[in-house]
Length: 360
Image (cartoon, rainbow, N blue to C red; front, side, top):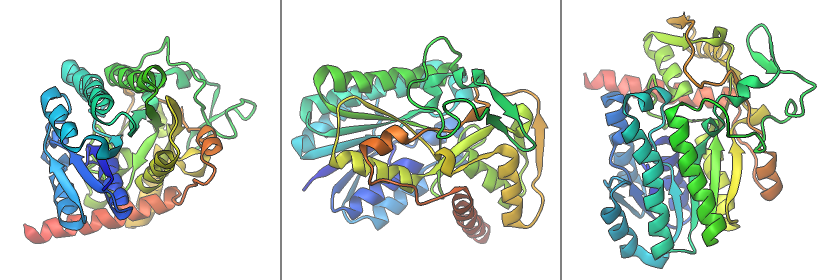
């Protein structure tokens, strides 16, 4: 049977990928040692997601392995060898702010861990398709130099700019900008994945994601914008908006739409491919607009405040162009827009909160 190895299998994208590839009849090997709980505390633990995968999937095997552990990863890949036809690498330290607290952990997870996985793939299953979850933070704060216009509820790109219609494409430079230490560690992993495709001819693809979201996200203040926002809307917990008048714009892609893009790549892989991937013009919102939508869903005002200080390297406006991906894979399209995404997260969060209250 064909095997897919998924790192970060308890996370939002990893768990979505595990369910998807299980439905395609593949054996799923999930690698996840729940470092998200270490990064962001007990409420961000992915243990619940792991339990759901072990209960619900037909052929799922879990490995609580650290991706930086070369010997453990090599042993795992040697066990399955060339039956591994896909490696989906979603494991990461994902936060700007957290990276500055423990730079060595951040870099070794995001850069060294990626190298360990690439080498294991090259050694044991070189024909496998290697799909990497990168980030738009590889561009640093270069997007903030775009000609932005302040509107009532959002910043917007000047309509005369070439990227106004579809969003930012892959030609934007990653150089001479402030990335945050997180952005730097992700750049390193991104370039490694590209190089293993170009230099060794491996089938690799980097997805430079905007805001990846969905009901399976264990959102925290430092990572998981929509998930954490909706959680605060449901529970009444305080939420803080950092800088840019709350008008900063993000495109948001549902985990199911992203994993469907992975599937298209798996069926017809290339070498060293790079794609910006997010909600594009189809699915995006500002902070103020997201808060307003949350208040519509809950029927009450949110408990939120504003801090003038923005996060270092944060984007004022980010909308991804997905035109390069669509050109390579014209059969792919979005199934979720921002309203449907928020409604689904709200319903899942409300149900999860109610279950927790009943147990208490």
